[in-house]
Amino acid sequence: MNKQVSKRPEFAPFPNGTKAVLPFAQSEYDSRIAGLRAILSENGLGAAVLTSMHNIAYYSGFLYCSFGRPYALVVTADKAVTISAGIDGGQPGRRSACDNLVYTDWQRDNFWRAVASVTGKGAAIGYEGDHLNLVQMQRLTSFLSPARSADIANATMQQRMMKSPAEIALIREGARVADLGGYAIREAIAEGAREIDVAMAGRDAMELEIARAFPDSEIRDSWVWFQSGLNTDGAHNPVTARRLEMGDILSLNTFPMISGYYTALERTLFLGEPDTASLAIWQANVEAHELGLSLIRPGATCSGITHEINAFFESRGLLHFRSFGYGHSFGVLSHYYGREAGLELREDVDTVLEPGHVVSMEPMLTLPEGMPGAGGYREHDILIVTDTGSENITGFPYGPDHNVI
Image 1 (cartoon, rainbow, N blue to C red):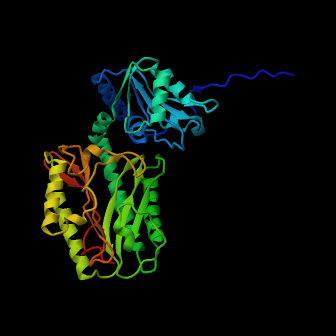
Image 2 (cartoon, rainbow, N blue to C red):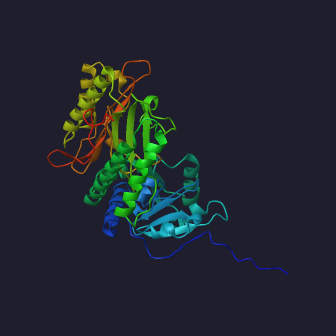
Image 3 (cartoon, rainbow, N blue to C red):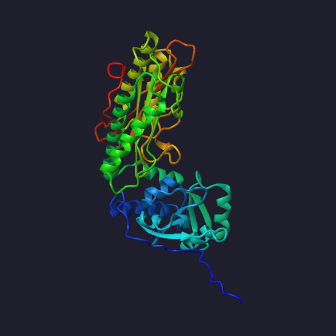
């Protein structure tokens, strides 16, 4: 007997349960979408197809887990719709401050069919040139037949760089949680402890506090890099099972993630008294850190701040040991997604600091093995640029007077 097989949908809404409590009020997301629509209008575009985790989370509240599948936020003059994969069920709809469409994987490219159902064909499309890969760009062209297309990644980054009062309040909380993680790590440091044991103490303390302070949030992505000895030479070196030894240089790095918002605390420590050479390098990096803190103010440029700290290190004969730029922006970003490259303290960034910017100050010196004072030295504070200067929202102390264990 022949059975009639019903046509499976390519995409459809999947409302399942009530909307979740998002990290910000609906008015905050409405304001962000209005800003995005202004970008579209200024560039003569009819729709935005945003595909990055950071932009989708910023404009809609939904932070996706890709697992090799594409996601989008599609915004037109009168619509804002997240496009999510069927494997996620109704969670994207609950976590979106706008509408949501779920695409199925029963045939290839249902994602782009869902996108086209919102944009229509022949519209002028804005996309993220720093995220959309070549294969997906070809799909966009094929399925949307855009009248023209334009990269709006930089314009959206400029919008994200200016933090709202609600964002600054959340970032303050993140800095507080980072400090709590730092204190838990300090308590766990002991001769013979493994890097991983110390790191877990900090991570657990932060996640427990996030769950207490933000009970409606998704608890995800907070992490710690706790490094010792040779493993301190890079800022992003993974944790190992190495056991701590007396005399070790240590690097404490806590990264609480609250609804996609990144904050950080980073400190140099020593297990036992540092030798004379190590102490001299550490104190020099602390002086550079304090100089940098004094330079964060409205009207200063990222490159200008960089040049002043470079001059300090050069006067000490240490500039060639500098590892990277001296700081960066904060907001919806992480070690595996997101970046606001227009607000990094580097020689090639001339952005002028304004009230509402949030930046780190984090000088790092790395001396190779075999040299007196070998290791990586780094301090990291978070500063909010104000009308008259800046406010340091990091509380964990730095320097030899506090962090010799």
